[in-house]
Image (cartoon, rainbow, N blue to C red; front, side, top):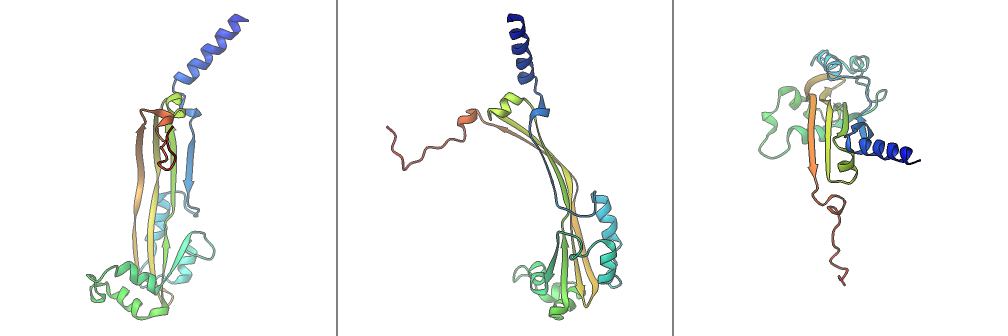
Length: 191
């Protein structure tokens, strides 16, 4: 009986102090799209040719807000806010295709996409993490941001950006552990 108790205590101690990061939580976050990587969405986006690509062509490329989730449709007022965010930028400063689109008012619209996949994993010592003394987190993934401006059912302008590769490391230390987040409520008198 004593031998069995020693084995259990020894196993538990090894498990808790061994830094078994597979016991720590992980988070997978993605915005649903048909693309599985930055390269895939960029290849589709690169096939868009301003002045030539139609709204029907966008549908074939996967940029249909009515068939694919998470594609935002912008009206001309929202496009104006994107390209003229303050008084220091004037309409004459904009690309001619954007100016013409904004002047067309309701015939002007935009499609905004921002697919992403993020994987967040806590790593390090399980005991320090569980008791909130030290939490290490590693975030990996990618995100893509694209804007297509459409005037009278034809793409007239496109803009892309994003991060092909994300690697973020966070090391949060709390010397007081679980007591770190406790705050004293000033409305409650201490006795």
